[in-house]
Length: 245
Image 1 (cartoon, rainbow, N blue to C red):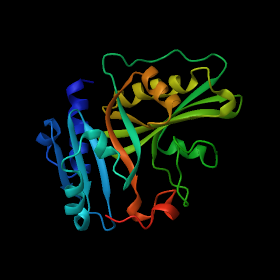
Image 2 (cartoon, rainbow, N blue to C red):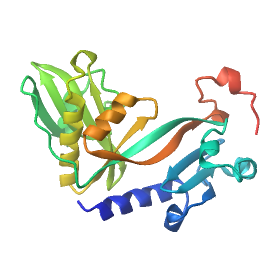
Image 3 (tube, rainbow, N blue to C red):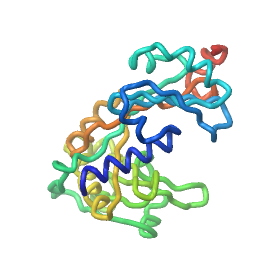
């Protein structure tokens, strides 16, 4: 897979998500855009290369723009109405590769309807999902088993037709031996073989997961905020609910 294809796929995705044009992503400016689809108070901030995009719902757009127009990138990300930061990684097309499997485990690659055999297993919230009707949004998984027990699983689901997000879970007693890295790296190879761009997301506070990304052949590509306090989603809503723009 060519790096130019990875770049263009991600840029198209970011432009759509943040309601901006592709040229804006190449600028060294702060740009304010309106999310025409949001019905509730919405703020999401993203930095890519040297640009910063601040995307808001229409009713609060002018107030947010007034508050942040003269601020630096670091100051913008400290805006008290947003919380959490996520680092998004893409594969380094020059470095990613299959990694040797640990001999003490067995492995399975599942895709499509075969994933339904995993219905009912737990402890894999980052890599496997089923809705209340038993349907899964997970497109592909690469898992490790100890005997008949699934002990680690990397999975991916669609953000767009050309872009899948990868997640991984390993049961606590089987961590610290590189299994998460092995699962992510080998799943990444399988996804890229299908002409799909994988990406991997992690909280800025999760050093362990950042190390998995790095060791799996991923590099950081963009950062965005996780949530905003105006819609009541903050875990500290009882303290911040009266904070007004």
